[in-house]
Image 1: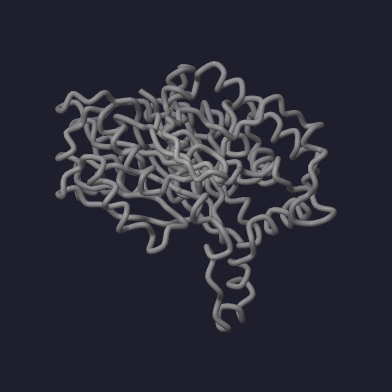
Image 2: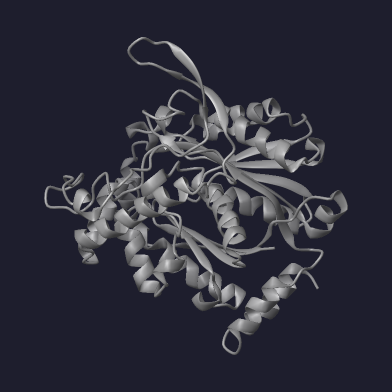
Length: 418
């Protein structure tokens, strides 16, 4: 039975047996789109951290090289690499092709960039999965990268024409994310105390996980150079740990930080995702192909959903996308072991979790973007590496990744661990 036919069969059981649908998801079939490797770089503080002087293309080359070496895949077998990115001029297409060549992939490996804003890394992984499912390629890599140190700023959004400005909903697409999230927090009555408590927990979970070495398996160390701004001297370092995690953070400490977007607002630098640099990559192929090559299968891609929401309410994206994903796969929240929901802002993540009625213990158990950063194009692929590692360590089988998306969208994907 084809993968699409299986999904249709599962979807038909939504009302009667979500548990049976979950059980079918766990079955192994030759046409499954499987993951044989998923890694990320550390995430570092934008403008201050270990990657502040490293270009996005160099980060991409590092993660692709690490993925190639650790998976032991013959690079000549990788037919396509899709890279999620948001800020690079020209979509990053030229330098990303160069990065793949630098990483040891032959000229026969095609490369392209894709941009769906905050879900770009997830979109890249899913695009590769769907290309394999459609028979266009047999083996591919979905990746994501962002150097916010070098490319984040006002220039990331171009000026709108008078025609675009004349349409109210179209004009809303360029409202800054912070202002959008502040408005959502006010409209949805999301108290600052609740946001700060959520953010503090993110830091605490990430600090505990880092101290226990729980991120080590998913992170590929990258050797690079960092420049001292005072002396302009370059020092070679190896970056292997997220450097944005604030130790000993509490809700009481966060309560002392001034609002960033409105004098009487609730959103500030401590309860929003960090500006950061990083990359991630995921190697995919069919189960039959992986077995033939002797590749270690760590999990599989099942399905995904993408939705549009009002631009001014972009933060509700996961709330809209996750139920659509459940409709497609026949399961409910009760059949999911773990959720990785991007913490763009504590306000939107708290609201989505509560409105969906999710068990908070299942959401971002090792912390999230508030604690260790959100390199825009990389996050979607990073979540795959993280959720695969979490599920392995905890013995979980079914996981969902999701995020809100600038201009008003949401995306979600379902993954199974071997």
